[in-house]
Length: 318
Image (tube, rainbow, N blue to C red):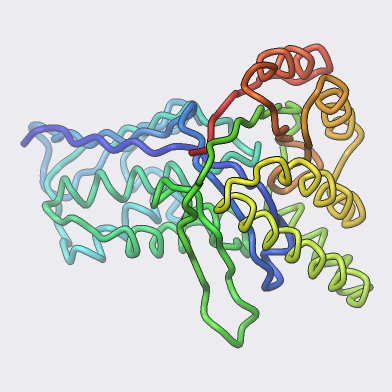
């Protein structure tokens, strides 16, 4: 039996983070410059049911029985076994690697889960639909994030720009692949400060519970910005995206999820010629993004590095 490999991209949120948890839409795109990879190979000489997990990036190694049963990777493996109906799978070695920074808003957890689920199900002779892979990854995401929006698993599974709304409880989640009429360039700057999504989402929820009227208005304004951005992207009116990013950032600041470090990077990008800039993801750390013309993208990346970004990525959305 040959080894099976699955590779998945990272992701970045363009518009709508936090508000998406409260029924508003969000837009996210894949980031192909960073990847998660799962390789499933036969455990030669080992008995059926033997599964050995290697994840060197997080210093995790051992048999499935050695690793805590509630670890997200263990849960992903067990989900696949349950989905395929195989109680005693052939012996295997599961190796997970990733170049996606953890807790930086680039979807590292979802990317690892999607890669794992795809590779393992194929190793077992079952090809799962994108919809099912996304659903299974969402269940694993609950371990990482508590109350995930569903956007990470969606954009990473389909590997295309998406418009996503989880609904408000009275309607079902909505996902639409966005057709980008005119490519545009983003510069991503990593603040180097961890941004655990579960923590920032929890902080916003606490603030919302204290002052629901104010926060509902912030979420609704964010939703309108996201709708305008979707229209601009599908019509090729990319010049509108920069001001919309700036407006979204102002609302995120009012939600309390920005930080001095992110604000400093955003200011540096704008001063260097970015058409707009905002934080991306949970906030209080992690990444910011800037809309740039291709001609000055590297210049903006350099300015972000000088301003303290620990890494930069230039990506084209198309």
